[in-house]
Length: 82
Image 1 (tube, rainbow, N blue to C red):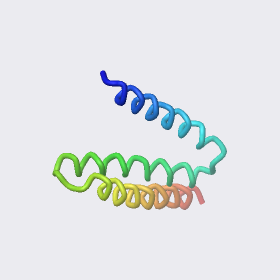
Image 2 (cartoon, helix red, strand yellow):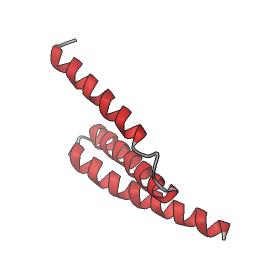
Image 3 (spheres, one colour):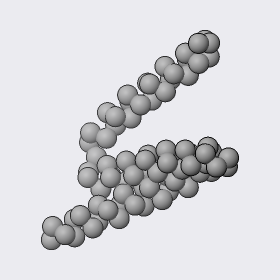
Image 4 (cartoon, rainbow, N blue to C red):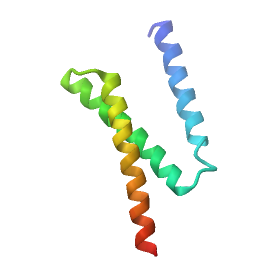
């Protein structure tokens, strides 16, 4: 393993650890929107890697769609409780 890969892996681990703690003070709507965006970004990036497209573009589109999906899901869950 090269030194660059080690630094990158430590950086990724640090970002993931910090992002887990960032959701503690959020409302359920905010949590679902952010988690939907994160999942969408991952799926979009993975999809473009597989198909050979622009990874950043796929991640951006996936994040937008995922965030919208998370928000809509939250609204539907709250309307069922009313």
